Amino acid sequence: MPTLMPSDTAAALGPNAERCDSRSLLLDRFCDPAAKEKDRHQVFTRAMGKAAIRAKSAAWNSWLSKPKPDQVTLHAQLQSRLMVNMAGGVMENAGLCLDRFGLPYIPGSAVKGCARRAALAALHEWCVADGHPAHKPTGPANPLAPCSEPFATPADMLAAIARVFGWCELDWSARSDQSDFRWACATNEATLKTAAEALAAHFRWPIEDRHRDTPWLSLPNFAGSVSFLPAYPVDLGKTGKVDGLPLDLPALGKLELDVVTCHHRDYYASDNPSAVATDTEEPVPVVFPAVAPGHVFTFALVPLRGAKDLSSPSDPSATPDGKAPFCLLTLARAWFKTGLEVFGLGAKTNAGYGWFDASDGVQDAVRKALDEIAQREREAREREQAEQQRKAEEEKRLREKQEREAALANLSGDERADKEIELLTDQQFDAKVRAFCKDPKRGGPTEEQKKAIVRALRGPRLAYWQAFKAKATKGDLAKVADAIRQLSKQMNLGKMP
Image (cartoon, rainbow, N blue to C red):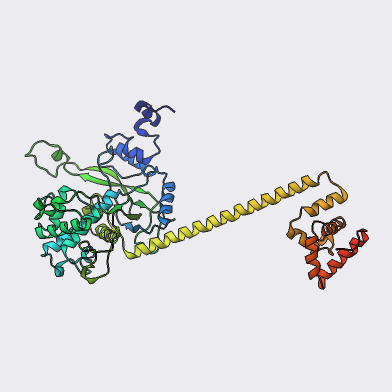
């Protein structure tokens, strides 16, 4: 198939991509960036219903259901509309992170940034309060308390943050407006120095003599110990109310139209520095798409370099505050959970967008729903396998019947009866012998088949006869044995062996 040129693509899709069935392509590439008001509204309305996401969702659910001992997950339900990548589309303030199937997702970089923000905020709060153990964020009223709970000192916490998220030169900058680490430590040089020395000791990196007072300058860049994967909505197999979840579930991948209204367009468009924003201008509503609230996103974190170390970041043999050892992967999950619930994720969180509930109740509800889905899928697979087995057995019986009919087609009389008995399985032959004295209408053999049975017992089935007569000492089996002996004499074959 030849490669389509832009003009060919435009002709195939029609004006303003009216024949485009992919919401991700429609929002990212094939729409008019200059569309305003009704035209803009029409594009987004079309995108609301264009999604082929079930295959992607099924693959995501399948991936989550497979046991991965080196991975931790967090389920969270979206409590308000979500906007991620607002500036990423061709239309102004209309971008969304949509995969090729049209399913909204949250990039791993946004997940990592959310976790890092919470960890640094908790460290900053601790350091601003003089950095003593008694002053770190604690108590149920402080939402940042879980972030610093495992650590004895701010330096320990900073070293753990650095190991989880990694760093570059700018993170150790001497300017607090450029360095998140320095800001988080409230410009405390001692904390920075101790954390950098702990990192150098852990990775066995030498500190140059000229950097003894600023050991971070001897540290190479580090990419971090935890991989924060993109997060997708998980399919719980239904919409509406789910026990344990605060909000009803929307249709998977549902988008909604939202609106922002500019009240001073002339003021913002003016190049006059003395211009004044008045309330006489007409407000201009601008619509944009957002992810509908109620979606449950599953976030996965995977260890990379030492993320499963059970140790204090500064001393491999120590445990902070005398408590049980922790691992960096568990810390990263706790930091992300805090960030998700305290700061939200995506754009316009201060306006109420991007807020999540990642409580224990949500975890339990989602796990239960996923377990029920997995159970239904297992039962469906078992039913399918049973049906396939039934069909295979039926085909086998039909094939065997056809083979028997083909084998008997050119035979007659005793030859045909002998062939019929020869084709019986051991189990079928045993059933025929036991029914030897029954009427053919009740499952017994015909007279021709009886004679064939006798001939078989005197020949290829002799071993069966020897075993049968040994146990045919009384009852119905004895009657069968006597009938076989009598028929053998009537056939002039003599006494049974």
